[in-house]
Amino acid sequence: MGRVRKVLTGQLVVGALVVAVAAAGFGLYWFQPWKLWQDETVEEALPGIVETSAPPTVAPSTAPSESASSATGPQALASGELISHEHATSGTVKLVRLADGSHVVRLENLDTSNGPDLRVWLTDAPVKEGKAGWHVFDDGEYVSLGKLKGNKGSQNYTLPADIDPARYTSVSIWCDRFDVSFGAAELAAA
Image (cartoon, rainbow, N blue to C red; front, side, top):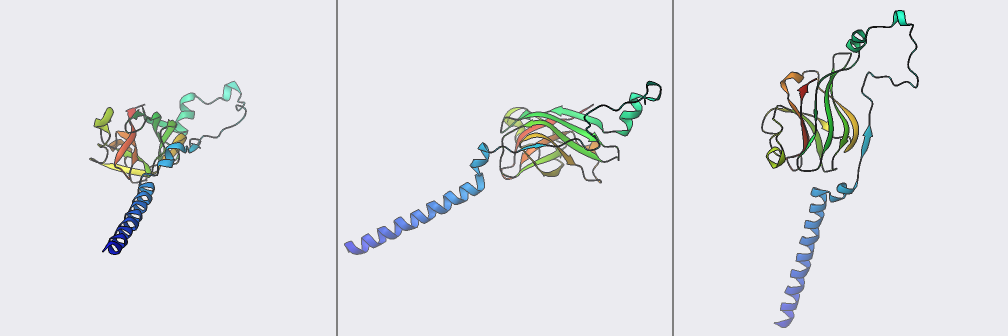
């Protein structure tokens, strides 16, 4: 009887260890806690802007007017400042129409936590401060513009051609795995 009890106890201990290791492995995969210490910085130029080391030289009498040059380059249609939700988040969001008529959402000076499965969403939801704003962005209409390229820096996200940007009023850095906003910005006309 004592030998049977020792065997059963040993099997229970081994079984419990197997379950604990499997649970720990799943938890590490699901939460990816190491991302809290890994920053990914992405610095992209705004499409359509050519950076030069020296300003172009143009004779004063032939210089184009400021309105003519801005009409052919990228034009900010709306912008807003990111506020924090689940994680401390800051930076500026701009909705930009490019010279070819396409649109991009531009994140400038983004600073947020890294996390699993972060996305950039263009939404019609109102931006609410604090915990009230954590879960509102999947309640209405939204368009995922793709995975967040980096949790720091300036980056561009192209809108699909069939999307009318006027229908959307905010941008969220959305954690698709946990259905929560890391941060969001209300878009106001520029």
